[in-house]
Length: 433
Image (cartoon, rainbow, N blue to C red; front, side):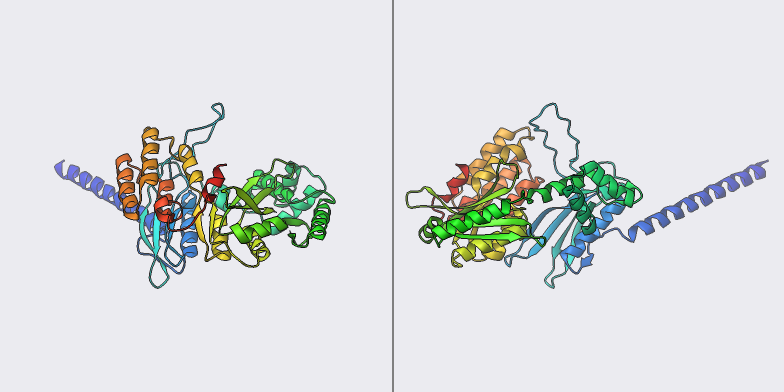
């Protein structure tokens, strides 16, 4: 009996061990397959683009969208550090203007991220990585709906434009593409993306005769005064995209008051909804003086490069010594291309105006706002600002706030203690008027 029991026990035990071993082997097989495309610290890439594409592809396989959370440039203006995170990272701002509007919670303070830096040989190396997510990951079938994956191919864009011109409604326009693709799953975009694209294209499409009327008016102005300058930019189909003009008075004013220029874009409240761009200076009375205007089709780097180059040609290739703008990345990139020797400053008023939007979700918002204002306005030297800023971050435990981290990284563009070495006239106050 004992021998029989012992044998049964051994058999059960051996059977259990076999099951354990088989289960262990299955886990090992799964992990080894996953580890083939899982990023690891120390991995090296030829460029930042390849590092970003690798992590983005990893995110698609895992079920999350990878975005660039923060980055830093070196003294040579080249990227030297980047922090890629899950799109659910960051803190949700519950400050809604419409209390009855339901909002999806896309920010869960997810810690998943991968940071990399550029080595002396120009290659990029992963420094650290966090894999854990605090939210449910998307299925592989839904990753194509991530914003970074939703693209409309050029041939389909052409079809959307043609159908829109013959006044086919957006829903039928999209359905025609679905029929051609056999099913919606074969498309890399949604109906909303089509509508947004049609609106974007339609914004630069003026009515019949409008472009001719603009040109006719400019020719009349130039005939009245030969110093009137204008330039019009057309696309490959002859449609008006961008236009820039400067009258004789503005060209004369630039010669006297062109050392410091503010550049701003606002939206006109007309049927075209076209971005209106202005170049503004400050005269000897401290009053604003117009130095040029433009209507642009888009607010990307390419468009701003065209606008700045056109304006620079109008001003006899004499670039301003200093320029003030908001924090728009496309504007910053264009300034680095067209005005490489110009001191670029962000508008402090715009930054401080964003405090409620970026920080109001914190329980001690009023104390944080007051402390930050003291750090910014009362610091007289670089060292004093650095010391006060670090105390401010530690006191309110704001180490993980990406917006503040980005401001600190670019502190030389907006903090008074860092920009006071340059003459700014009264131009810094123009944005708030």
